[in-house]
Length: 608
Image (cartoon, rainbow, N blue to C red; front, side):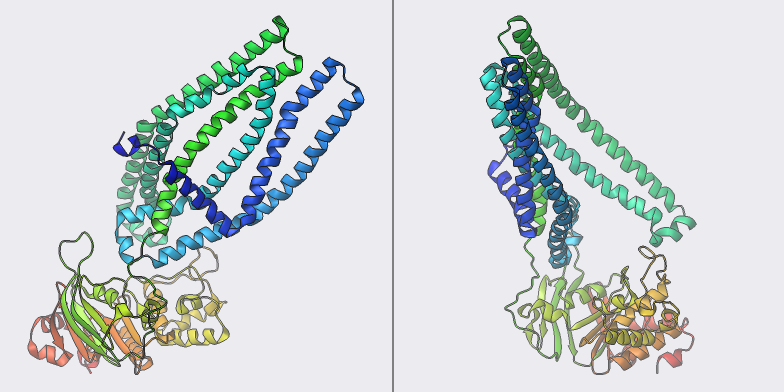
């Protein structure tokens, strides 16, 4: 076992983490805690009355010759309490079921908001991503586990007070026997819980790989490759590898966990239960110094008491187990965001100029820089083309411009002021962007274009106009729901399925529908044919009159429309100028242009 597992339990940390989860439920819906804990108290009293005191009272009262009327009245009071409790329990059950979604929504909102806030670099970090998966995968269930553990403590405590008192009045020796499983739990509880935690965590990591393989077999994104190539064999082998790893985890931890369970069953079933029955039977039938009702209490309750006492011990170790899970949740929710919203920072004024000075950037874990000492100035209304081969740093530049990352060195200035000094949301509102790896969501076409909900009739007109300019409205118009048609059939059998080029046109429509001052397009026409590309760019520049446009493209035909072209290579600007100036330089840009020229249908047309 590793050093981590040999450390003593930090009870202070465990208590704080468990209280933290109760606090989440209390903030989401305090009534859930109140109703659950009241149910625990009432349920414990009911269990004590029906399962223990009822039999002791009835049998002993009859054996001692008490008045039948008194016995009936007492039993009637017990049954009345039970009836009231059953009514309350059903009402409470309905209430908790209705409020469960409120707790779920509250906790998921916390996680989802944080997921949007955390730095994009976090999702490049596999350790952080694993923490995120572990935190989100069990958050709501773990909150309820903590609450139910506390409710169990309340239930057991109330029940034990009643049952324990009866057993003490009968013979204290039985209470000592009932505590034996607790002693066992105190001896091995921490080791058992740590084993279970390690087992769960390793299972979850391997299961993530297995689930990825499953997705490749049923998601449409992979369907063509899986049918036309032998990648299904690769994925099949990975599935077998994941299953083998899961078997290895079971083999590593299963026997130890099984041994601990066997030892507990031995103590519980043989020592406590059988031993107590033997002693009680002897005292009643042989020694005749125990009433029949008392004997029944011992036989009926001793395992319940032993189980309850042991469960108390388990709950304390469960606090530690819960704490290990909550650590993942808190590590995610309490992550200190480096690129954070500052409500006190000033909003961005009217955009006039962006300046990149000595800009350099290196991704975490990478030895080489993605960008090195980049100097670039963009004025309002400029049309800027960023060109270069794959891996030249073009997309990284776009991410830095929108402050998805902060530079390792250098700075970006907006109107002469470092962009870090502006309110983040205000700064990002400047940009309307279509990324190379754009995504369409399984929502309506209108929501995909506007990138928000609450679509109005005016919004629908804006969406129609944007789809017209991007060249996809003719198809959208054929759907019964028009722009309100759901994208994909994942949740709607009548949903729309688009080809790669059609989907890209919908993503481009976001630019036409936006009001942003700076338009950024990262390989916006990669799935379009040259004619559709030319038409799209003409529409874009017409719609973006007066705005600043920055676009990345491998097809240099689009660069002819730019006011200035920047050629990137290995994270550096190697050439810059207008299209004509760069051709006259006869450098790397000209070489790239001439290699592509033969693929253009009409070079003269696209270079106008």
